[in-house]
Length: 98
Image 1 (cartoon, rainbow, N blue to C red):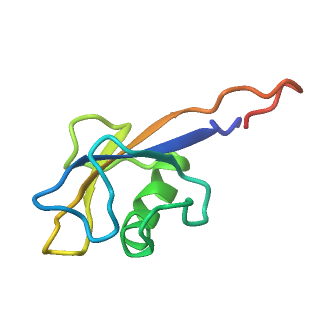
Image 2 (image 1 turned 90 degrees about the vertical axis):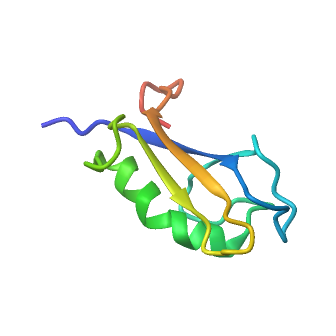
């Protein structure tokens, strides 16, 4: 059985007050196992299990869209809300995903 390959895009979609790290609504990162440059490590730690699950085809029954999950930053003073969206990996020139 062929396994589908996905990438996960992380996008900051909301916050209740200015982020201590300086994140702004609309910033995006692509999940690649390691904390992306200029992304808060604490937020990434909260997002990691959801991003990994989405990357391998998981769905979350509390979300309407099977390709999206919303996750909040653990910093309760800021309450950043991130959208994690799964999309098909773009094929590489050699025909493999990537």
